[in-house]
Length: 420
Image (cartoon, rainbow, N blue to C red; front, side, top):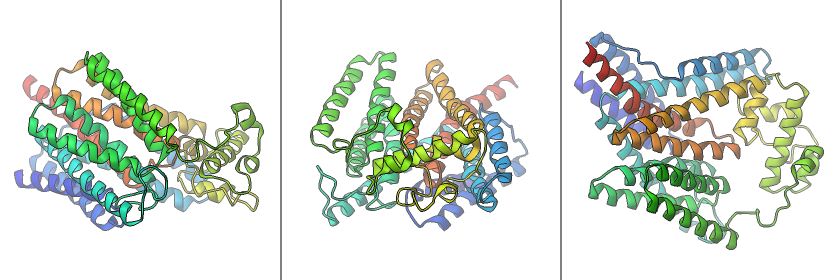
């Protein structure tokens, strides 16, 4: 069975490598389902499967039931079933696959090394693509997107904000000097690659990464590093604003909250809307539709929004999705769906926070701090886009599964063996 364990980790390593690369659906499927089958085979042969529950089973189940019930009111039931299978069942199965596949901490650290190596290759291609297309480091002439979305940048920015926390906390908690040199190199490369995406949500998420990390470091009594991060955050914020690198934000007039709720979506967008006004107008369209019946589910699936609300008056600013995961969930599943969704993602964060506070194990503190910081950036990005899907969601659930294996399942199994 040791060979089977190695093959499982190899396939999971391949999955981490290909997740941020476009047009790799076939490789991704093989890298996901092969270890799943092997894991079932391992349990069958060993006959010692122990279900070590997390705190996520009930939220997962309730959210699944609410999504399933939306089938009956969906504007496209076939699309809803497809989305439930691909964007809900598959990520949850991946979480448990990784959670049970990792038998020892070395497996988790190997997957982290693959993640860092993959991010460097991804970033280097971004640099190449950026220069090839005449990109400028201080103005938005081209948005690098790596292997995922060249010229777009949004998904690439999210990818970097998911990887950077694991690199940063490795510098804090890992002691090996050679490892630290590699991590510093990986951090610098990822930061530069994030910058050339010129994605506002990604930069804001990074700022919150820095602020949140400084708070955790204060709790750890690492006052100097915490102060250094705050100073760095202040300087970079000033530079980005002074150089007007927050695209459109220095020229846009954003309506006040009271104005916003009184305006029609068409008034918010105008005749030639910027990307910011498009988002604001789409959010208002969704909010208006939700307010008609807050508990009515239009059907689980990010791309049902445009099919439901697009008409001749708004087709110039309505995208297929809301470009806001939270408003999108309320639109798809009703307010009850949003409440359960918030319960689920809060459970992710609280579990990591508990482990970070109570554990003295360096590796557990590393994964818990990294996951919390990553989640801050992930959900900030999801406030400005519908990114809780596709390869981004799979990577999120994979990282959560790795962390929960190290923080929860492996120590719990050792405890059970010791008691026996």
